[in-house]
Every structure is written in structure tokens, then in C-alpha cells.
Length: 186
Ligand code: S3P
Image (cartoon, rainbow, N blue to C red; front, top):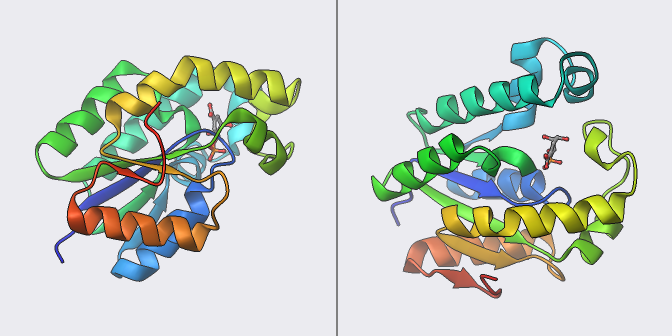
């Protein structure tokens, strides 16, 4: 089975992107990249410190540059994209172009905010969830769902699935070129 050079996982915080990316990378013998980790290395400080000291715009600029870098990988790579990677139009356009050019497949890990509230802690790298986690996740879902949908080649409902079964669904979907796997593209 031939896989795209780059597989990118997108979705809200708590959908399991990093864990599923590791599973997929292992399955395909691919490198596993995590945009937050690369941003931290580039900036020489944590995601939280970038938000606190430099502001969200600076973080988003790092994020865009890191996404571009990931899309230029010679591959094969599986990329855990951070939740906000779809916020900038330039990022969405870059992912859609890479997909159109056959370089990348974009997978949206989808779950409703009420599920994600249970799965997110006040994680060190999630300053946006420090206050009113549920309200913030609901607003992010409302704001971003159409963006995730816009870029996604494959949609997986992760609500009641383990990371292993999500990875297995993605492997199947990639091999048959399916658009949705056990989920709705809302
Ligand atoms: C963010 C998601 C986080 C991190 C930052 C902002 C977002 O990554 O990049 O806190 O805007 O959704 P994860 O999706 O890996 O938690």
C-alpha cells in the first residue's frame, strides 16, 4: 500500500492527535512529528511561555512556519498538528494544496466538546484552557469545525474509540481512499 508522504492529524485539543500519530508512525515505519514540540524547540521555550511572554500571534507565526516545514518533509512522516493549526487561512490553504498535489492526507480527529472536557486537563501546553475549559472548547468547536472539515480528507469520530482503534481506522481509510471513518463530517 502506498501512503502519502505526509499524514497530518488535525482536531481540537484532547482528540488524541499525538498518541494516534505515534501509533500510525510505528505502523508505517514513518517519522513522527508534533508541531507543538517543534515550535518549542525553535522558540527555545515552552508553548505556555510563548503565549505568556510573546502572545498568541507569535505562537501562531511559529506554528505556520513549522507546518510549512512539515509539509516539505521528504517523508514519510506523520504529523500531530496542534489544535489551532487550522486557524490561519494560509495554513488551511497549504494543507489543501498538499492534499490536492498528492503529497499529504489530512485526517480530522473529531469529538464533541463534552467528550473533550473529560479528556483535557489544565495541560502545561494548553494555556487557552486555563479558564472555563468547557466554554472554551465549545466555542473552539463552533469556530473551527468548518475549518477542520474544509481541510480534511478523512474524518474519524474518536468519541468512544481507543487511539489504537482510531489508528486502525485511519490505516483502512488511507488504503481504500475513504472519506469518513466511523464518524460524521459535521
Ligand atoms: C492549541 C492547541 C494546543 C497548543 C496550544 C493552542 C489550540 O495543542 O498548540 O495550547 O489553539 O487549539 P494540542 O492540540 O496538541 O493540545
